Length: 144
Image 1: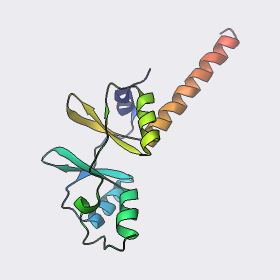
Image 2 (image 1 turned 120 degrees about the horizontal axis):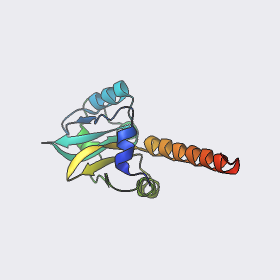
Image 3 (image 1 turned 90 degrees about the vertical axis):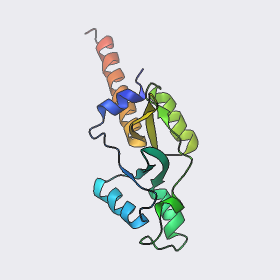
Image 4 (image 1 turned 30 degrees about the vertical axis):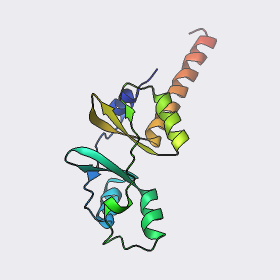
């Protein structure tokens, strides 16, 4: 059974993108666009204090008529950040994402931030696992 640690190891890019709570939403949007990511961790003094997603930006800036050049990340970020442990099975990660309707989860290992997994990472793993299982069954059926 694959773990979240395995997901991190298999990611093509395992960078952690973060910004300060005092950053403007416009700066956050530019960083997210530059790195083609849908969420960024909000960190202060090396600790995760929030997460900012595209959903936060749309719902809390654009739909409320705020100005992204002056609105601060701290004012719109999601403060209650859910996370997974690196040793947890991928299936538990997938269940948490589905149940809470979230797309990005920080991964902790030994009390430290180890990375971030997205729903795309989890889906990629599920597809890879399914394809592997199908090939194994085909080999078994054909006696190879």
